[in-house]
Image 1: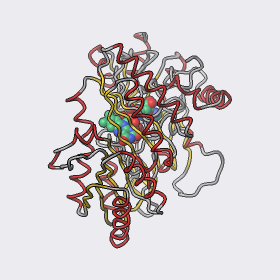
Image 2 (image 1 turned 135 degrees about the horizontal axis):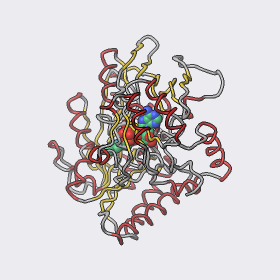
Image 3 (image 1 turned 135 degrees about the vertical axis):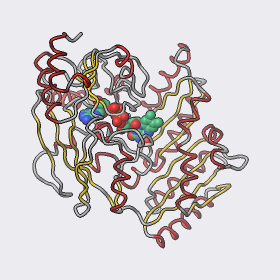
Image 4 (image 1 turned 120 degrees about the vertical axis):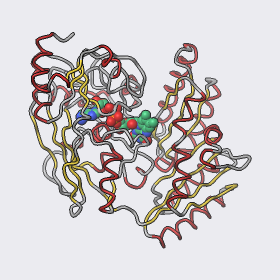
Length: 461
Ligand SMILES: Cc1cc2nc3c(=O)[nH]c(=O)nc-3n(C[C@H](O)[C@H](O)[C@H](O)COP(=O)(O)OP(=O)(O)OC[C@H]3O[C@@H](n4cnc5c(N)ncnc54)[C@H](O)[C@@H]3O)c2cc1C
């Protein structure tokens, strides 16, 4: 509980309208995309960096927990008040401060929605690389804090690869600017990247300088259907080693194909057991040649159908069907658990075989999607959180999946982060010394452990 006098002090900083304590408001902020209920004591919505700083000074003095939050779409349970305290959504700080088309960068406040930034830079023939499927709602601050990426991370990288500068408010309220506008920077420790993937535990991002990249002149998408997953995986390996870098390469299994069959008029032939969506972008002539080469590779690996989308409209039809998957799950299950493991791309066939075997072993309904070109696998478990027996099997499945991914040289997460979901697996990936270093950094920056406590950086599991 936060005392009335402290709430009054915070109201003096942000105004009465922006400090919420009504239980109805608390319910809105009790969940994120991981759907576990953690009701906060209060919610504070600052408009300016100075307000963030003032609130943090009070919180640090009183040892009140603060959980920064963007749109709350993360799938790992990392923007909820796991130990009580205040949620601090940064959504009112949603200004694009500058688009510098000459130096190809933008300075934005953390609450800017990813798709809004994309729209704003497009007239300059530029784009912001990170493209999480949630881009119509998720914020740049949330994207950076989770090192989010999307299909085109394969060619352009994730949020970390586009981050060059930050303004951060430390736990004690100090405001610090780190990084610069330059694309090259060899001065000192690389502090901005420390906050990327920190999941709101080290400081509150109040401004970000992000790199922008030229908007590609043209785009093709090849939709290749295979009779089995092995052939599709072989095609992925050959495309990756052919020297072509697709801007996206997503793989869907039969269960997911059946879910999107017919969406927006998209039809797949009988016997479709695996679908590869391969997007290439660049100069129109270059991508014509690359399309031909990829088509040949897919034919050589026994593709049973290949459709080439050339125009923006044709591309949109193909990708809209792929993006529709998220919406279709609610029709077939009560609870969806979206796992997120990464393996070296050469190990994709191995991890696929393992997931199929585990699906059988634990008798679970799992559709498999992968950002195949970068070995990032998303088994989508269609389940019911009320079914305790099934949830036990879901946990066993997840633990075996991550163990296998790590044994193949992979990582616990490609893009969704750790949060609550994978906190207990951290010691499977990291040596104790590495975990100790992470905790020491946390202690240095936030000695009272007020920023997003209960995270993967906490001592006790
Ligand atoms: C339908 C759907 C599709 C998705 N697809 C993808 C995908 O393709 N790729 C992908 O990577 N993710 C995906 N996600 C997960 C999620 O959208 C992303 O992780 C996104 O980056 C979260 O942004 P957010 O604004 O919702 O942040 P939140 O979920 O609110 O917060 C995420 C983390 O960032 C911290 N944080 C937020 N703002 C700040 C700040 N200003 N300063 C410090 N810390 C802060 C929070 O404390 C929390 O730890 C998807 C989610 C959904 C629901």
